[in-house]
Length: 411
Ligand code: GLA
Image (tube, rainbow, N blue to C red; front, side, top):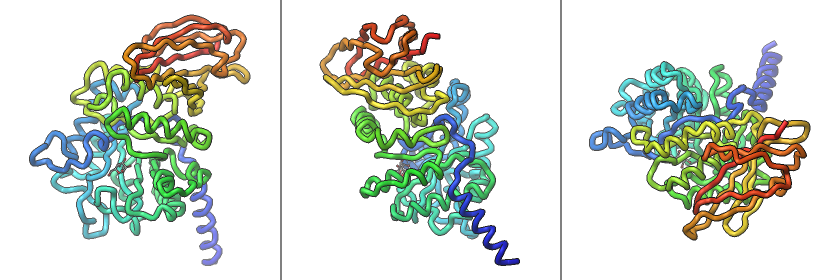
């Protein structure tokens, strides 16, 4: 009898390990995360307004709601590194830094939930987080339970101070403990990125089954060079990357840095547009207290968000790169028979000082629906017209800027 129960339990465990079907993240997650903008600033004594503390997260939660971001879908408020105390508590549980999070994380989760938002958490699979705070290795079960008790809805699990080879076992194992809590938590993994750095080919089948999203490449930094290096990585590897994305499981090119110091207005429009083409999570890392209205309008562009959140969940690709002009397309709804509507981003990587004229023929981008397409410029908010697949028209793209067209099938 005991043996039979044990075998049944092990089988149940194995079955669960191999099926992530938590019903979450059917479209790419949206929200706000501390890391890119606020880093590991723990100096609350001298910099109380910008340090990693509970007031930073309650303030950003308030602003997500009052400034209209939450209504557009930006719902996850996520801690990143440096929230932890240096030691676990007497019972071996994780605990936040007591001075910076005096109310505790259950209270912070309650605050976020009361605003109608979701609570995002950060930890690391290894012995330490990347900034050197306690990691979860050796404590997987207790930590999964702690996150559930705190009301966590979204967990980013980093991979510093861990052996990337062991992640093939470790990330699914922790996913199993998350599932066992019975609390629905979006699971964001850094597993394939750490393996890529070592030249290991990731086990995509397992990653897709285990994680709702995953990092593929380097951390984003506050510069156009960083944004374009990420775009190049995704485009250069698109044949192996794109097929892994779909409802419930997304590639994550990292945070939106729009509204910070490093991107011009045109570059910010380009990041937003290309992230939407890539079906990327839209996780802002910026200071919502000081948002220039121009940048806020980019982040709140409903039409671009709708492309990102398209229900088909097909990740777009770079079709061409010529004279510093890149054409990126993403199949979106509505569809008719085997024909898709498309979002098209015309991206300029040029720096020659004036808008560049780009001729366009939709059939060259794979759009061959005989009744044609209604074409809208999403940033300008104007319908350019209805075009047959072979019709020619042109757009002007600013240096390091973008034009985004939505091409809807005409019924
Ligand atoms: C890694 C991650 C980043 C961030 C830092 C925190 O570099 O990739 O996104 O979480 O750790 O230390």
